[in-house]
Image (tube, rainbow, N blue to C red):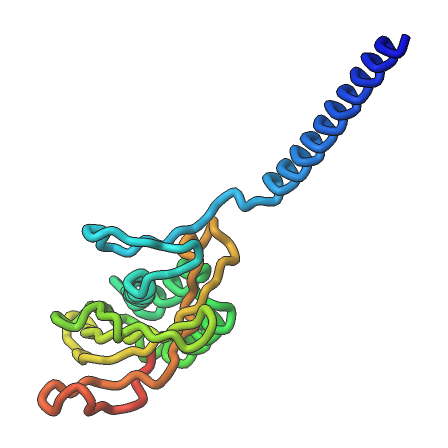
Length: 216
């Protein structure tokens, strides 16, 4: 009987061990399922534009080239008025609303209200000054998830075919991380309007000579 009892005890011990292992595995599975259910469905990765030499990119890190490209693209679209400035500016402000902070959106509406008569009938375009495109020095971090991007742009406006503005202007734009609505803003960034007063670039006198007061 003692040998039989030993076998029974060994069997019971093995069963308890297996049941304990099953319980632990079940608990780990539940933890994994909870973690999986809470994991984000989409992870945004910002790749640098030049991968010829390879790149190591962490989730959440944004290359300066991407910040510059975002600021330039959105700002250029905002300032593209192909037919009538008062109508086109209004349309662009609302079309690009997802790429502005709420404060910047309201600021653009106020700017439109103040300049509506001035820009009525005007056609406007902006583009990079040749040789003054992206450089790392043009993107400066000013706080957590906040940057100032410097754009040197050629601004041209015409009225009924006659050129009324043709200037080279430096625009310091504030860009912030803004992961609010991926459906309307897949960049996860937003313009927070101007970081400082734009200045006109006087080519004859060098880059540092400028006149304040130029609006967006």
